[in-house]
Amino acid sequence: MRTILFFTISILTLLSSCNNPTVIHEKKDIIIIAGKIINFDRNSGKNILTIYINDNGRATQLNYPTKVDSLGNFHVKFDRYYPQDVMIAYKTNFRIIVHPGDSLYVEFNGNTRQRTKIFETVKYSGDAAELNSKLAKYLKNYFETRPSSKIIHEKEKILNAANYIKFQDSIRIAREAFRDDFITSHKPDKELINWINSDIQCSYYEKLLDYPDRHKRYNKLSRDWRIEEEYFDFISNIKPLGIEDLIYSDTRWFINRFLNDYIWEIAWNHADSISKRNADSLIFHQIIELSPNNGLIKQITLNEFVNSRLTKYEVALYEKNENLIKTIITKNFLIEPINNHYYETKKIIEKPVLASEIEVNGTTDKSAIEIWKNILNDNKDKVIYIDCWATWCGACISEFPNSNKMMEEYKDKDVAFVYLCLKSKEKQWKTILADKKLKGKHYFLNDKQSAYFVKVLKISGYPTYSIIDRKGQIIRTGSSFRPAHVETEKIINQLL
View 1 (spheres, rainbow, N blue to C red):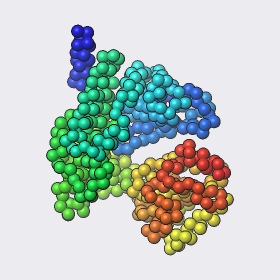
View 2: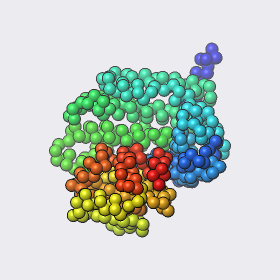
View 3: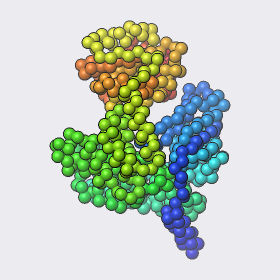
View 4: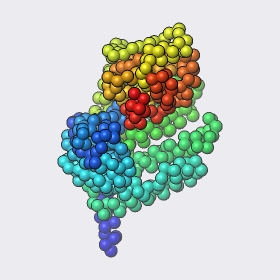
């Protein structure tokens, strides 16, 4: 009888939380996260803690790196429009939930690299302390029991569409049972229950949306392979997304999959050759047509797409559809950032201002061999860190803040920072250099020059980073030697 009573109470609590969401005011305010890393080793070379934030307004992941002092203390400040989780990353990472105006103190053991272990050591005080303590308990138990990514990927490969949906249904049912047990045992407040429910729903639909692409890649199916459109019938079952659901910030990845795996797929299947030549306009209008009218899915998806074009320094889509965009996207936390993004991008395109400590080498008739010799000769007896990137590579551009940070750390040492832009458009190249305020020595390479460096530096994808010793020998090359990473700086320090 007691078990039945507890179960009934938990379900009533759950339903109450869903039907009576917390009133959320879209007012941007400062959040402060301070704390201490226990057992901090100041000699480890690992003295940067980063807060990662999924930002729906700019449709990107923001990062706030901060130095940890010699005693292990850190302090980060940023602003948000509404409550959401953010990620604290040191040797491992873990989520916390914050609200505009919060001031939260966090302590955790800096020795562990295991996420499940970090939850055993983390302690909170200040705003949202009890909420985050219970979140830590939930996540610790969940990570210990969830299916491994290896199992998920195997099912994505071997199961047909119908059986894969059944497989994800079984995971969702298990997660709902796990949630109910947690509610009975720990009695979380409405806010945490809503976070858990948003996690369950968005993770479920994200996996379903991602299945066709993964199944195609894992089985090396032909480029023309398409899943039957009936597979996407589950779209009609997606519940409206409210601002209170954005407390689970990975809703952004669900939106990303909704855009790229559903909207693009359906639009491309039905478009004629003329429409495909104007892909931006096609996708823009298909978002409006295919997205649910209730809730925030249409607003956030449209915002995601327009922002993606502004991020590539393309303003035509926004300018052509500005009135329609402002009619559909009405939430302050979406429309204010996208408007600011447009005006910032327009200003950079029209009046690019480069950093003062930069050397720019644009289009040249020099052979690639001459450029390579110049790079080595100009930086003789120095360690050379080479960043090979492209203007269309989001992962490349996202690392540039870390590049500037690393250049600052080595400014008084014999380290040269060289940037090679390959397979890109020169106008966009200069716009990005201005926008990111990049320093260092920069080379824009034409197609023929790019082909040479692809061979010399063994570039198989972007970004690729190479480390050259004082004698001009290539010591390391690959995508893993990213700026400000511990392993990268360790190699450079050994060569100095």
